[in-house]
Length: 409
Image (cartoon, rainbow, N blue to C red; front, side):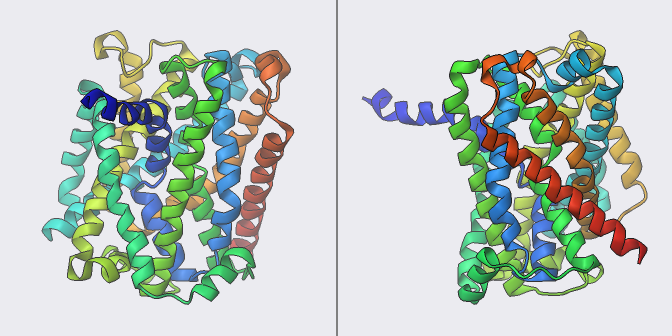
C-alpha cells in the first residue's frame, strides 16, 4: 500500500530531481546576492531580462544534455577531437576562470550567511567552510547530500512571500516585465550583465552534459530530460523574479558600493520580520552547499577530459587523483583570493559581471558542437534552439560592448 503512494515520489525524484537540482544550484549565493543588488539598484527595470532569458536558458541547457545523451562524451573531449587542443584548452581555461570567480563569491556568500547567524566576522568561517565543502565532494556522497539540500533551498520561497507582502506596484512590475524601457549607463549595463552572468552560468552547461553521461541516459531519454530542465530553470528564474521584486520594494539604493549583506537581507523583512537576516543567512548557506560542489566538479571534469584522466564522483580519490586534485586546487586558489579580504557584496556582484563577459565564448563552443552533423548525426537540435543559442550570444556580446564603452567614456 505504501509503495503505491511512494511510487509517484520515486518517479519524480528519478525523472525530475536532477534537472531541478541543477536549476536550484543556479540560485547560488552569488546569484541570490546579484539578483538582490540588481533589484535594489535598478528597481523593476531589468525584470524583462528574466522574461527573455528563461526560454533561451532552457534551450541551451537542453542542447548541453543532448550532447551527453547522444554522444556519451563530455564537451571538452568533443572540442578536442573535432576542433583541436587549442580550442579545447581555451574553453577549459574560460570555464575555470568563470568557476573560480563564482566559487570565491559563493564561499564568501556562505560565510556571510554564518556571519548573519552568529554575528561574528565572515572571515572566521572561510577556512572551515572550504574544508567542509572539499570533504563533502572528495570523501562523501555529494549526490546523496544534494537531495536533502535541494529541499533546504526551499527557504528561497520566502522571497515569493516577501515579494507579495511588500505590496509592490504590480502595474509597474508588469510594465517593466513586458514593456521595458532600458536606461543605458554603466550601472544599468553592469546590472544587466551580472544578471545574465548568474543566469547563464557556464558551469551548468558542462555539468548537464556530464550528468547525462553519469546517469547513463541516451537519445531515448531526451524528452524526460527536456521536461526536467524546463521545470528546473523555470523554478530558478521564478525565484529570481521575486528576489528582484522584493529587493526593489524593500531596499532601492542606486549605489552598489553602499550596500551591505545586512541591507540586501532586508528584502525578506516583509515575510520574516526581524528574523530576515537569519533566514537570509540560512538561504545563503543551503544554496552554497548545493552549488559550490557542482562548480568545483565541473572544472575537474573539463580538465580531466582534456588530459584523459580518470574522472567521476563515483571514483575513489586514489583512483582519480588528477580529477580530485583539480577540485582541491580550485579551493586553494579560492582561499588565496579570499586572503585579500574582499567586500562580500562587491565580490559576489562584480564576479558575475565578469562571468557574463566570459560566457559568450563557451556558448559559441557549445553551438559548434551541437550543430555538427558528424557529432550529433540525426539528433541535431531544432533550428529554433540553435537560434535561441545565437540570440543569447548576441545579447551577451552587446552587453560586453556596452560595458567596455561606458568604462572608456
